[in-house]
Image (cartoon, rainbow, N blue to C red):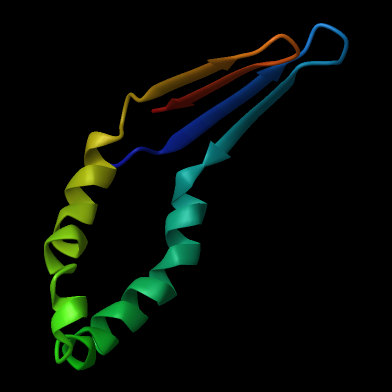
Amino acid sequence: MLPMFLHFKVHSPKKVPINLYIPLLLVYILLFPFIILGVILLPLLMANKKIRAYLPLIKALPSLLVASRGTNITVQSEEHDIHIHMF
């Protein structure tokens, strides 16, 4: 199942914390025209041997996106704590 929300939280001791919930469905809708363009241009790009080497990566992108559900990323520094969670 695709991730549906991205929770982005930035905490700084001196500032007001920032909490953003980003609906990824909107991001998917915005990226859809680029996907269609890529599908249309793929046969033209397959003529080049250097570009053909990247085909396995292009085939793996959907499974990588599905596997990103539940990802937690935390970055801590002296000034900020940043937390990203995909669900």
